Amino acid sequence: MSENCNHDCGSCTANCSSREGNVPREGNGKPDFSAKANPHSRVKKVIGVVSGKGGVGKSVVTSLLSVILRRRGLNTAILDADVTGPSIPKAFGVKGQLMASDEGIFPANSISGIRMVSLNLLLDNETDPVVWRGPVIAGTVKQFWSDVMWGDVEFMFVDMPPGTGDVPLTVFQSLPVDGILIVTSPQELVGMIVEKAVHMAQMMDIPVLGIIENMAYFQCDQCGKRHYIFGQSHLEEIAGRNGIAVTAQMPMDPAMAAACDAGRIEMFDAPWLDGVADALQKL
Image (cartoon, rainbow, N blue to C red; front, side):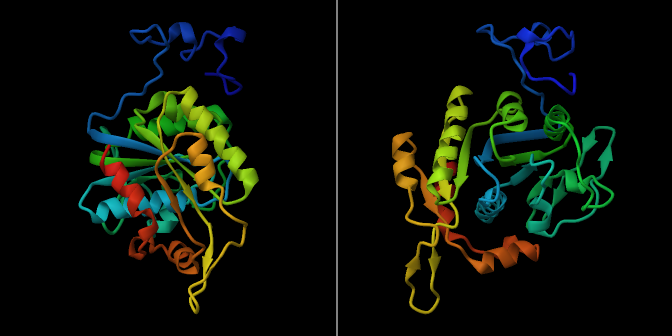
């Protein structure tokens, strides 16, 4: 694949391995871009965590849901597909480089046994920038699926970069995604951006399992009153308009931010996401 690939084979003369004519086809004649899992991987459910824009807490939601389901006795894993902005290892306090054998790459493990792979666990220095073009980043995400020996995993969460670009497209086409969760914030503008993510999932025939609104309110620890700092929520309106049944609201909580910064997200309780976890277990 050319580094300038725009995924439009109809306007391209290159005869690369990714050209539509060279790609295997499904029974319905559509190109099959699916990537094979590592022989040592047995992943039952793959859940994508997406957002229309950055800075809404997508990685926090990914981390907390993996923690909740792990506490319920399920094997969980995180594929950090946000290659240029990886933050999963820091939230869990996981450091050091990944190990590998001739059969594949071993994922890192958190204190409670959550498996994870992130580009930050492959760099010599975790602050080194990743200055790559989109197709190279997308190819790296596919390698995280194909080259990593994930073992027995009941729920894998894929923490995707914001937007509807190369990486979400690659994940939707290449991984057996069972559904996505969309993370948003209260601003009405972000609501419009959320619907772009909803429509992309619909175009790719990927179910939208729920919407999670982060930073929905601040609850005073003295009087218990909720303050809607970014304005009243449009969550139910957006969910209803798109036929999405599962929703959740998360408050602005300094303790949660402190837990992430300290690498102790596994010690934090997030009861606001219990309903989402329940819905995932019913898949």
